[in-house]
Each structure stands twice: as structure tokens, then as C-alpha cells.
Image 1 (tube, rainbow, N blue to C red):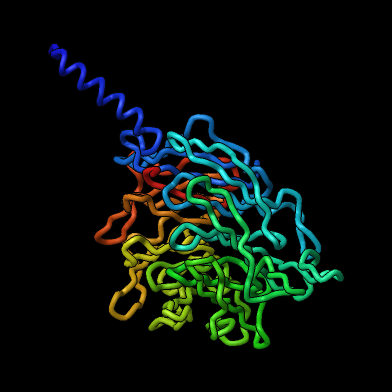
Image 2 (image 1 turned 180 degrees about the vertical axis):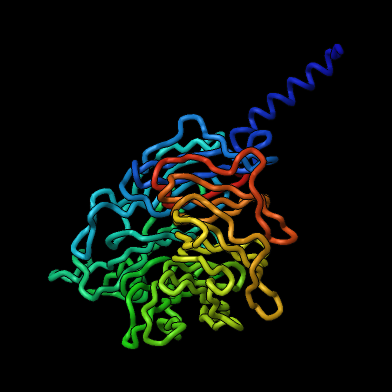
Length: 427
């Protein structure tokens, strides 16, 4: 078939526009971009997510250096144009930062290509996690050890009380660059502190609306792990301690040691994983940034999934109906080889109780550490630390059931995959 001059001109114009748009939005058949950090080589890998199959295709030029060592978290700024990688650093302690403890900023180009911009430094020692507020204007980095007060009266030395800290940065929407936000509520020698203190040995933090919750590995006088709650001021990024103080986590069996490995949530629901007793603790986040236990708030995973061991991460889907739990290992008597899986449960919207989803648990690569849902809500992926892979599933929105992707569900990545992040069209 021959095209008229006008037809050929129109087709050429359309192609030119498509190429131009390709620098700021997903290419044809691509619904998003995924970035995976690996601790084995301190690299970040990029993938295109196929709209029709969920298949992952490596981005040209990937992987890139994380510009630090031991990457532990990766975040995408709202709009998808900037990515932050949080590097823990090597051999850090309460006495000082480890080599390579950095916050690396990247700009996102066409097809999800990352271009390194610069690094920043949080105020504490041994970075553990990071979150952005709901507006995407503030980045909050969690460190295991807070700075200590030096003889000169400055907070720039070893930790003295065992507590952790959060450093807050304002993120520029046009460049992604970070500016330190100081703590106007607490001053030393008339100088604002450059951090907010949390409980001892913090593990992970989670923003939910205007609230920020940090789960602490250390225990209170009663031997309970705690959660430090804050209210986030959207106008200036200040973190306000709530009147509740640290919230004690009610143990399944009082006096029994817990090992809370993660805190996550969506909507008003918050769930904590206890790897020591294979339990989920369920809470509802209040407007005052307090946590109240859900009905039947403590759920034993082994009641539904007898072979489950060491849950270490949770994710609630975009509809707040389904809860997915990454289980680091599974002790099935049907095989002599331990493996990892993903437990799936429905959240009853009437009484908040959890029930297992048919077909669950679902096998994943060894050592799952993070879970994400793609922007179109069709697929779910886990990063698998030990295997150095990503596992993908197709999500049934009506039932929450997961099934293998049509073109294969396992994708090799950058070794010791510690976490992953996903973004839709870049705007």
C-alpha cells in the first residue's frame, strides 16, 4: 500500500513526536522502570517493565556504581526524574561512619538510564533505611547511631546513648538536590540539632500520610521493642514527636524475645514482621500518629502456612485488600532444601482480620528482602538477596492470587539484591 504525501508527512511527524516523548515517558510497551541495588558489587541495575507480560529487560548501560558501599535502600522521587541510593558504608559503628556511607543522587533519562549527580552525607552512623514524605519534598534517612555531643558542644562525634537518628533533607523538585533541614525543636548552644533522635538500634521506618514510624531493635525496660512516632510538617519538613512517646510492641508471649525486621503499610494499616516468632503485628495509624492494634492484630503466620520461617518484609497492594509477606526461609518437610516464599493474605475490610489466599505461599528466589507492585497494579516483584535475582508475578486484582509471568519469572540482577524500587512514566 502506498501512502500519500500527507500520509507520509503525518507518519513522520508522529514518529518524531514519539521519539521526543520517549525522553520523558515510557517507551512503547513499557509501563515502568525498575532499579535494583546489589551489595555484592555496590551496583544499581535498571530494567524496563513490559506492559503485556511483566518481563524485565535490562536498560542499556546498566548497571552503575552506587557511589558508596553496602547499599541498603533505594527511593524514587515523585515524578520519577530522580533516584536516591542509601549506602550504609563498611565497618561503621557508634564510633564513626564506615567507608562509603553516602546518599547518592541520580537523574533519570530516557529508558530509565541513571546519571550520577552527587553524593550527600546523613548526620548519623550506619545508615539503615530511608523514606520520602507523601509530597516527595523531603527525604528522611534513618541511621543506627545518632551523633553524640562533643566537648565543644557540637553534635559531631560518637554516640553516647545508644539511640538512632533521622536526618531530614529537602529535595529540590527541579534538580533533586538535597538541603539539610535542621531540628528547630531542639537546640544546643543556640544551634539547631541537625537530626532527630529515635529509639535504640532502629531497623526500618515507614511514612504513612503525615506520619513517620520507626521500629527500634532495642528494647524498653519491659524488654519490648518499640516504635518511635512522628508527625511530619509538610510546610518545612520538621518532625514533631507525638505525645504518645515510643509505642511498645505487644509480644505474643510476654517475656519472649522478638525480632521485628520490618514495618510497612498502606492507607491506615501498619504491619510489623517478627522473624523470631513468625508473627505479624497489625495496627491502624490514627490522625495523631498513634498506633492502635487491629482486631485480631497479632497473626501467627504458621497457623496458615506451617512451614514459614523468618518473615522479613511486608507489602500491602494499592487497593489495601491484599497483604504479601516475604519469608526468608521455609522449612517444608517435603524437601531437604530450605527455600524462600511469598505468603499472601486478604485483609477483611470489615474486621481487619487476615485470611490466607488460595495457592499461597508462592516460591521466590532465595532470601527475599523487598517487595514492589508495578504502577499499573498488574505485577508484583521481590528482590532476592541470596539468589541475586528478582522474582515476578502476575497479580489477580479480584482475588489477590499470584501466578507466574508468561515469559519467565526469574531475572538475574547485580548480586546480593538488597532492595528495589519501581517508577511509572517519567513526568
